[in-house]
Image (cartoon, rainbow over all chains, first blue to last red; front, side):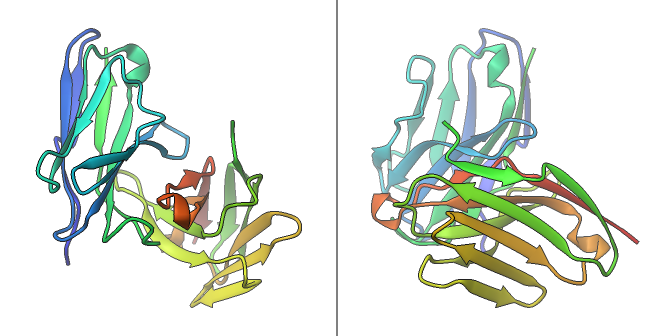
Length: 114
Length: 113
């Protein structure tokens, strides 16, 4: 069964350092989402891609966060510099196309900023 | 701005009992209402979903009830099993706006054997 892959699964970093997360969506899925889930809360969308184009990054803190999906397949989310408040689970999800009901989530990357 | 409010935050139910989780939304443009199940260390997985033109949807032991006029929907887990112990999230989206999911705060369900 096809799954969304994410790495690393866990990342511990110090404040002001740079971190990067990688996501490989299910093959053929055109739409890719990055969500942030703070412990005890529901996920919140950071950025949505349709192929290689950003369609919604209204909730992405652009002073420190960046995301790219250069070839419209896998994607990287970067934080520079990391702050204590960035500690959270970063989830990647994909769907076959924009507007498709079901989003398939990866296992997430648990970030701890010390 | 919390557009989807979920309650309770946690609940404990005995095996065989009924678990009920409620959600309320504000944006009347929402047209898709899924429920996700999340186990510790895993990403959320779609459990069941409903559109606003239907008042109820049942899949196995899971039922969604939807009240459009009250802007509320709920998840009922019948004959709850220990394997159902997980965190459940309601969500809402607008298909024409890219289907961006707005999640509720989550309900941690513990089913005691």
